[in-house]
Amino acid sequence: MSNETLTAKVTGKIIGSDDDQSGLMSELNAFLKAGGLQTIETRARDKGLSDMVSTWRNSEHPESTSAETIRSLFTQSEIEAFTNKTGQNESGAVSALATQLPRAIHLINA
Image 1 (cartoon, one colour):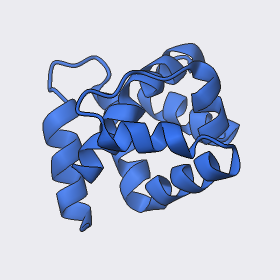
Image 2 (cartoon, rainbow, N blue to C red):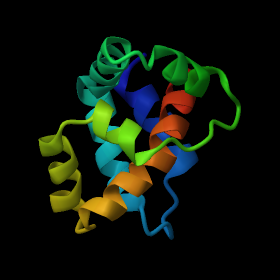
Image 3 (tube, rainbow, N blue to C red):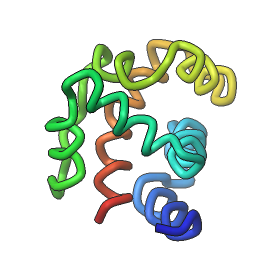
């Protein structure tokens, strides 16, 4: 999938201009299109979470995941980068990622 297609799918479907999480979603989009999707899939496989990611990919309305799962799929430095770039505190960023990562993965693969 091209970066343009990925950008259009993620941006067009989960980022609203009035959404207070739009900064984080923009950063998540950039992360995923810059190879982060493959990184997340590899980490999921290594940590026994492949079935969960597969469910996100295949579910029309994927459910949010846990903060623990987000901390398993992202490094601390990646989470800090999201907080630094968005101005959210760490707890807020992790919570937003727990909601938006499953949706983003579904949309990328839709």
